[in-house]
Amino acid sequence: MDADFLIIGGGIAGISAAARMSELGSVIVLETEEALAHHASGRSAALFEPRYGAPAVVGLSMASEAYFRSVPGVLSPRGLLLVGKADRAEAFEHDLVDMHFDRISVEEARGIVPILNPDVVAMAGYAAHAEDVDTDLLVQGFAREAKGRGAKVLTKARVTAIAKEGAGWRVTSSAGEFTARIVVNAAGAWVDQVAAMAGVRPLGFTPYRRSMARIPAPGGHDVSKWPMMFGPGEDWYAKPDAGALIVSPAEEDLMEPHDAWADDMVLAEGLARYEEMVTEPVTRLISNWAGLRTFAPDRVLVIGPDAREPAFFWLAGQGGYGFQTSAAASRLAADLIGGRTPELDAELVAQLAPSRFG
Image (cartoon, rainbow, N blue to C red; front, side, top):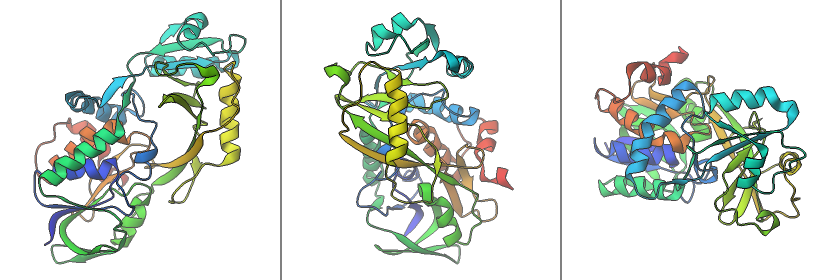
């Protein structure tokens, strides 16, 4: 065997798993693109909001926090500001409770973000518990850890065939052929395609596009200390980014797996929803892009051996939670593959298992 574990996908899921699994044996990572974290991981809004998502996702996020705090520079203060119009009261109240916001006055909100339009914004809530994630620091840290234990991380290595061979697998890629005892499917939007290639039943993952635009700092303001802002039901959001502001329509448009790009009309609609809430118009775009957020049918990550083929391991369905769950998700994957009792409680582990799909 060339490796104990062959990981398909070099996003945050795959490279964090490589770091953890390199403690257990030899690892090869195959990434299609020229660099790690090219697709969804490289296009993330990069926020650690541990109360965001389904209960099982929240459990993984909470369990990841200690690791993030142990690595200097991974987390930094940001905060969240929820703002809504009067006709969005029901959705506003839901988000306020669900995400543990403190209700604040519109005047207080304008003290934090002075461009908010007092004639439109009728409700506001603030939460300090959201923090920025230095995604590059996290990806490169996991990569160094994996390589430090001898893992091979290969880019420009598109997988073209996967075949069961004896007690393991033979994986053919544009970087060569490799044999491994266990294949780890961390291929993001392509996880079902990888499964089908291996003769494993796909689980029904769905990629959705999310677009973003970078705009100049509104009105010349220093936005560096502004929180991330979003509307009730997350129908748009805006976040400081390198002296500018990124604005997203927060859409979920069903897509086939591909190298995504922003849809101009969808982006314009999202920018209009943002503009309605502020006093400064959007006069130009610096850049725009899109990424695919891939979900399992129940919108919870899938972590564990396939129910029918235990040498095929799923690490999939990160959706919009890949970075903030990465520390605990990768540790769970290594625990399960290594035959160790997981650090997470048994109920949470069961909620993440592929076997829940029958």
